[in-house]
Length: 339
Ligand code: NAD
Ligand code: SER
Image 1: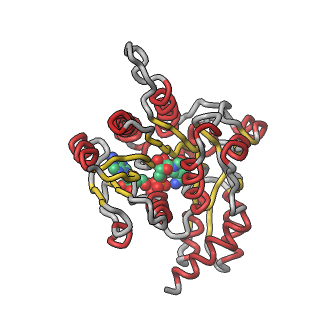
Image 2: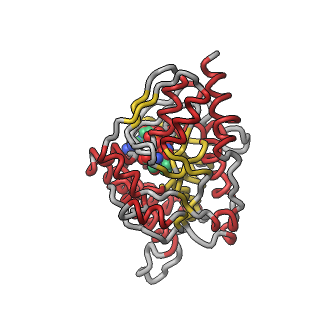
């Protein structure tokens, strides 16, 4: 008999590692994890199986579904925005092609087991494309349907995958005479920039915030690649992980839409600098603007309206800006440094 499991792709990434730690606290949940890179022994021990490989590998996916009955997919594997911009074709292959394969896998599982398969997808504020800074500042908190004109390959990939998820849930196979919905129960969150106290991001464009914090904590100087005024929404990693779990757990009937904005606080690069210098006296932060990366940040919103998430599934961040620094980042970084 195939074992019922939750599948996490991109399991070795910043979110994946923390999600697996949190999910594995529930004795009822068996996890299988897939990533291009091997996980640490400690993390792997929290899973019933780990697979090192590519989400684009059909043979690997076939092997997995022959052994496991997947009832929930957290599909995290992706190339992030800066990396995707340098390697747009690879990004499209992984971010779109990989998501299509996983959606198909979920539809297959739902058909085979006769029950819906939850598909939880991390989208991004990168799906927004504000045309200029004046519009960005005038727009303030954007709603899900606003400014859906991304200027990056990553943003285009994420926006299209939101549509693919909606399509798989409602319309996949619609011309079959015996058409029934695929059973893919698609749920997406548009994350702001996430900040982990445990890992340093790479390949993203929101990385300037978390990079600044980590460099200061390790006593290294940091040259910030966006100007002081550059501002987007952010969130502490524990809130991001709780959001994925809360959206996955919400009764389908309560969800009025497939894709939800969420946020915790907005902060400028200067805001990060001020907090970092306050927390780590002597921290060296300079601004050496990379104009092309900075232009990407200019197209992402100042803030997002997350009212539908609050109303439909009770989204509420635990960490505002003060709590992110005082109750999460600084104590965790101190504990890690003194270990
Ligand atoms: P990450 O880069 O830390 O992790 C991504 C993981 O995916 C890596 O471990 C990588 O090895 C794996 N991966 C990449 N290509 C793969 C492939 N072809 N096959 C198998 N594994 C592959 O990123 P993260 O911060 O953990 O983000 C996870 C997801 O959340 C991504 O989809 C990202 O777009 C989304 N997201 C992240 C943020 C953020 O600020 N971190 C914000 C919005 C959305
Ligand atoms: N934080 C991600 C990035 O910068 C956005 O999804 O790529």
